[in-house]
Image (cartoon, rainbow, N blue to C red; front, side, top):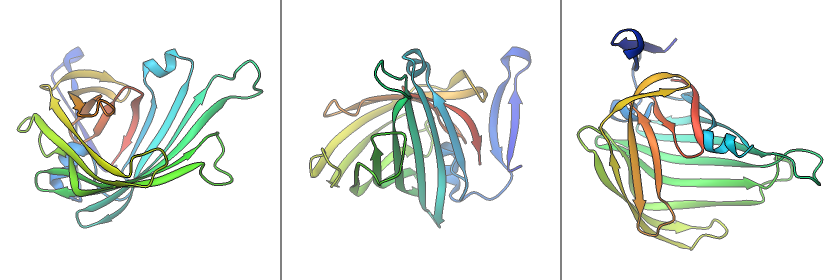
Length: 229
């Protein structure tokens, strides 16, 4: 097992904390993002808002390549919806993401993201929509420490060939992290920062929970079910 799980406090006040017993790819990024090396994996299930609508969500994110501080991660996300009156089976979509990231001394940067969208629960026949968003310069998406850097601005400038996108990408997100508090997740009670981001175009606003040495634990659509460093 590559993960050490320690608890602080006693009884109902115990909070799980994550630490690693092997060298990390880039210690600065591992501390906040949970990225340790090839094979690091997060499995997500639906957030309550998705379940309450009668839908189901399954997503697995895995680190697929590491070259010093350059990191590639891939995600396979399935959204299943209840069958309609006329449909004979469940309806839904599949999205396959590939992110190119870089770990720097001050945090985790996003260089590009590729998306393949399948309009059904079958990946046969190829993606219905596909394209890549490239950012220049790379975007700081997660500072090294949310305690030392509780607010930051993400500047997205680049190009996209994904259908429906503008060719030129140009918007910013102002993000702030609240002080860490104890939160109950499926994987246990964890000390987590609530991060809120507001975008200049109004289309990329987001709120999520970030856990040190694990990564994103919860957002509007998903909750982490398991984490394997």
